[in-house]
Image (tube, rainbow, N blue to C red):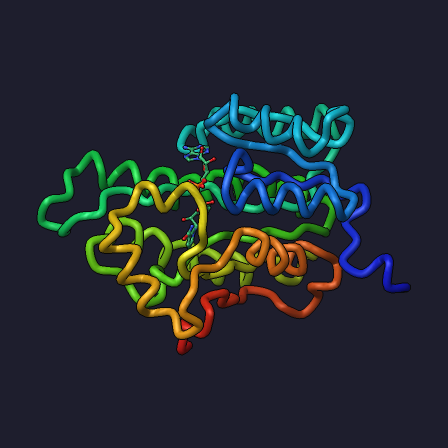
Length: 254
Ligand SMILES: NC(=O)c1ccc[n+]([C@@H]2O[C@H](COP(=O)([O-])OP(=O)(O)OC[C@H]3O[C@@H](n4cnc5c(N)ncnc54)[C@H](O)[C@@H]3O)[C@@H](O)[C@H]2O)c1
């Protein structure tokens, strides 16, 4: 291997959920630069189209796939489209997510709770389940889930969100142990505050609280998260499996 092929994703087919903006868009950009075919899977069809157009003007190496990840039939349809277009799927990044309500648990409605669970946790399950038959048949695959430091520590006024992210961490570990001898790797990352549009869903007080907990004293940027995920999605990630990899400016203590 020479230095030019480090972390190469040449001709890999990567599904990136939530690729219209924020961390997902940075992952999509990085994967395209590394040679992958990238599926922009997002409920925001216009945003996904715009971002894919910016990054891959010809459309030769990308597919825009509008999808609501909370709906099993839509997720199944997404994977069918990917297989029709590219013939396989090598990488899945479960990145899409919502912050949900930022308020005391006692004020959270049942509908708000269900919605965060549906997007952040059920969506990850549905996407894993939909790509696994192909990956297991190929005896090759990389799944990277975007959890959060909130899933390790729990953030006040973000109980539903924190709960989903703890679930994503455990889903990662359970699934990795289940299939780690079949060529498919499952890892997750736990970012602290990253400068993306999701922060608009969260009150300034909550953002200030989260930044105050970061010893490096700054927010992260989407490209920093994309760099870590790039490694976890590559063939060079060969003995890291079932891991929960921190990206939190020294906030994480375990
Ligand atoms: N930004 C942060 O501070 C931070 C920190 C830790 C973890 N994360 C996690 O990183 C991931 C990406 O976050 P971001 O900050 O880039 O968010 P973002 O709001 O900028 O982007 C999220 C994307 O997910 C898409 N999406 C939402 N619901 C969907 C659905 N039902 N079906 C399909 N797509 C849907 C949105 O349209 C959007 O494009 C999320 O899982 C988030 O929880 C973010």
